[in-house]
Length: 64
Ligand SMILES: [Zn+2]
Image 1: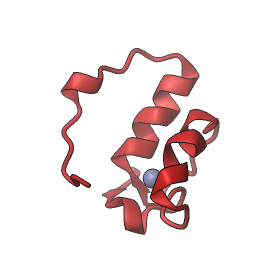
Image 2 (image 1 turned 180 degrees about the horizontal axis):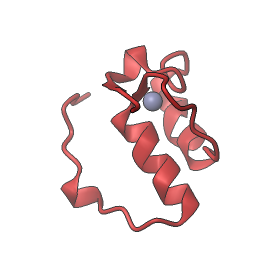
Image 3 (image 1 turned 90 degrees about the horizontal axis):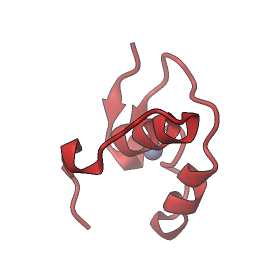
Image 4 (image 1 turned 90 degrees about the vertical axis):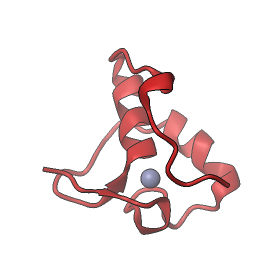
């Protein structure tokens, strides 16, 4: 299973500046398996696949 990590430790967005992460996730169309990715990237990936994902059900553990 994919582990959930904080954004700074995320394989996908961890090296991207926060201002660009949202745009990056909007184009996210692949998800590495068995790699540390943050919850936000995983949800964005699901959404890009067309799966129904509710924002209100997602906790926000890392306020900015
Ligand atoms: Zn991420």
